[in-house]
Image (cartoon, rainbow, N blue to C red; front, side):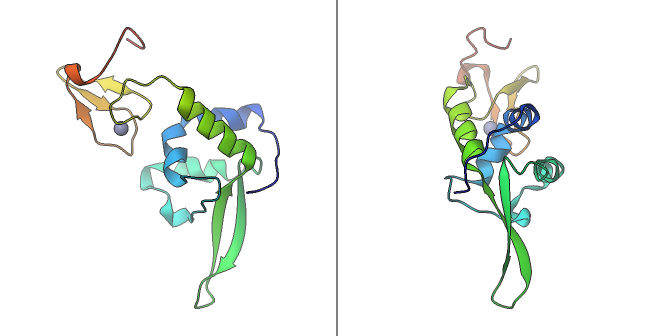
Length: 130
Ligand SMILES: [Zn+2]
């Protein structure tokens, strides 16, 4: 894990706004990933994330054939934020992503990386976000 640095406001915003994507990239603070592991729908926002050295560290490594590539890893501050935000957010989405969109006779998960659809009975709306 990288040394601790604090997140600035815009860093926190990009983490909060795309929480489901960031959670998909790593399961633990020690996980690393390559840019080709980033799902297509997340490429643009991941490019923006790379400006934030307070959020991810980048290391250049070489594969067995000597081809260079970069691996990314969350900083400690970013990981703590992501984990905490995931634990504390209220979601009524059965797939545990951030929320659902009402499509008239059914609901769809609002995360671009998820195709789940739900009936009204499957989600616990409880007045939140409606
Ligand atoms: Zn989902």
